[in-house]
Length: 160
Figure (cartoon, helix red, strand yellow):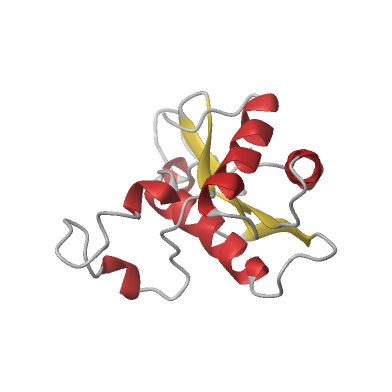
């Protein structure tokens, strides 16, 4: 919600505050619910994952690492969530194109947070990008399957 101007504004005139945008992102409670659902999917598949939910700017809202998940999985889970929101796309979509000779070759080396393995999904609500979710610890396909099931169960779309 936009704050009201603290000074007098004549009717029909605008202020600098008219240029502010409203932003939407998952609440902490919703992010934790999403992580709980990813964790449930992982347990059902006998996986031990690290998982993360970020807001539309790529900042972490919540993250968890299941008992037994590899220590390095958390950095990848955060990177997958960040990459998904950065490009508004599934991280797995970049697995082939970022290989030498691919159309996107090299861009994934421009930011150490970018991860181009499957398992990161953008979160869209009413066509707007509101966040990202990522998991790591299984195969790339297993990570994505767990995140995808959880994301869809909560009503998010993964495409605009």
